[in-house]
Image (tube, rainbow, N blue to C red):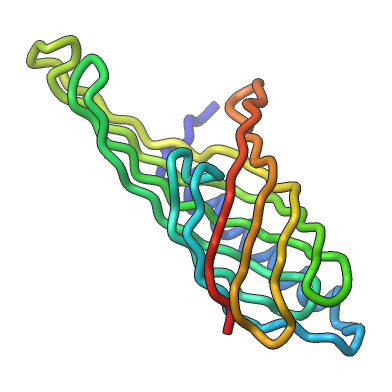
Length: 173
């Protein structure tokens, strides 16, 4: 039995997500006639970035989109540490006009490092790929403008689910 390194897991997860995006965009080729602004940029407090993230969302059509984000923050709890996360999610919108239910699935590629653990010279680092989802409300006018999102964003780590949430504010164009 071979073990998989974090880099291989990240690469596999990324390839699987790209495959899903392409497959779903072909499967949802029929459009309802309504179209949303294709691009959004938003700041999210909480969510898949844990503390916060800055995100870009691209709409394949009015229903299907993909989101990529970046989060980096430091902490001083039992030592000095940093968290870097890259949320990547496929999301689906339903609803009409500006008000939508949003559901999504994806991964968060993470890197956590610590130094001076318990104020000693010990240090450690870890890279992981975590599963995540999104279920919530999204306000996004068809013609673009302010985007507001709020919802549950659970994390799937090994064999456990951790409930989390997020609130986002941004702009679509």
